[in-house]
Length: 429
Image 1 (spheres, helix red, strand yellow):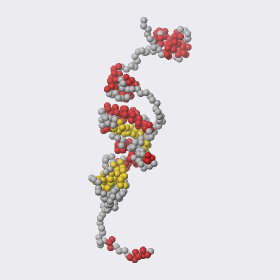
Image 2 (tube, rainbow, N blue to C red; image 1 turned 135 degrees about the vertical axis):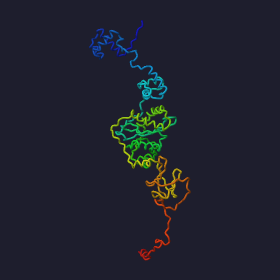
Image 3 (cartoon, rainbow, N blue to C red; image 1 turned 90 degrees about the horizontal axis):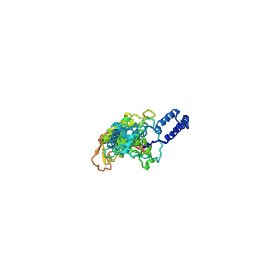
Image 4 (tube, rainbow, N blue to C red; image 1 turned 90 degrees about the vertical axis):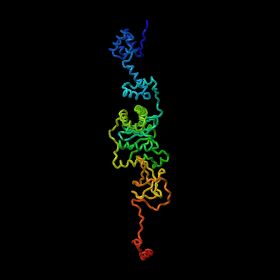
């Protein structure tokens, strides 16, 4: 005769011994209730169960059997197939969302995680204590009070690396603007913020790192406040405050978003067969609202602190967000810039002299303008370097054409006679 093994926990075994003492008459129901910590009514229920089934009646009735919540094997096999074929590089959380959204398989995150571990698609990571602990900075109270901005180089789509420029509102955690570009240079950043202003208007401040586009990091720049980048100059002109972070953790929200997007957005772009920057930027227009709905928070206050852009400033934005460099007007009234030569015309909107400083503006539409005292000078580009002239018999180029007219011999100016007596009186005095 085979004996059946009964598995009991330490707690169940202790309770069984108490109930056995109750059955043997060593204690009464009240004493058993005090020892176990259950009501006398439940003690009577346990006593009758042990008398009827012995120790087997005391153990949990579902022990050794299948759980009532056990998933159907067909569902698990279908999920496993989808994970192997489509979501092999996804994390458990993101894979769980896509299984529910696309394949209509509703599983918990931990179930998906266990399946991925079993089929070697996921390796559990041991928890590590951080070496440096950073104090969590409280969010700003209002939307538009501060934007965290940065660029991330990554293979977002295709086989070549590109840069995702991203601004995140500090108060709400919303992605206020995102754009793919080839680099994080000044032209790409200028285009990004012009699109941002057209969409959201002017924020109060921008929190960014010390990348060379945003800040001059030379040691002499500490004592010389005039050494600023094109980006700093442009933001100063529109009165937007720039805050430079000393560590990635300082602007951790935008850094954290890059971590999420490098995991999720890369896979979304792959599923959508996006391979070019143009298609990727179109994809972002639909993806960002869905992303914000999942990861944004409600700010403490409802006020929008973005400043409106008046018509005067709006007209100046192309000029402000242009690359500007100082140059000097040469003796032959030419201006040299990047091995290109621009000949100033004789008539101008503003008087200009030899040796005057002008500002060369490289606009984002690739046009070049020469600015002198907030007025643009007329010029024509020379096909080659002009011959050197030490001096040109022209004192200045003005708003009127220079006249080479001389008065005739019978002109009153030529007939003017100085009184010799008055001259002698002046000399004597």
